[in-house]
Image 1: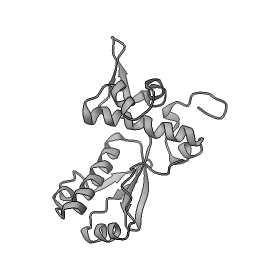
Image 2: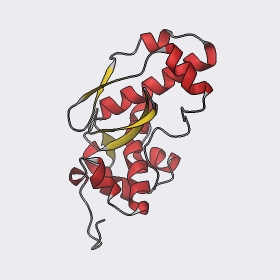
Image 3: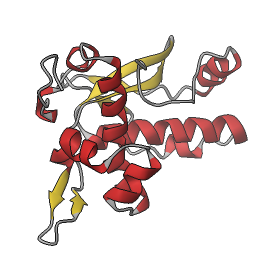
Length: 174
């Protein structure tokens, strides 16, 4: 909702400033809502199951992230294969974690795969998952391509220095 209490369509959130100018409670709800479609895709869950896992109401998800769903004739919601919802996510960069805003669930998924490959590498020393990433760059909400950090020595250095934070993929918390 905006400052006047009106529902903000998800299409109105396209750049980080659109999100970060909103109240903290809205930002928290938004970050949870945009995770629901990804959770549904990854784990073959219903909207109800994914929303419950992420501790957010189904109605809130539909209100905020409705464009990620198709309403079926039986009234249930089916997640679309991909969506254009704004996500501000963290990814390792040359100087530590950096925020990347993206309007494409496929780019967000690549960032998630990148984090997973980094965690695997740091735990096992095996860099095969880093090498198997489908792309080495990610496109931000402005269309700019940003390189994913794949340098094993730099990743190890940042992890040893405590620079990498794995607790959340999503950017600034309110």
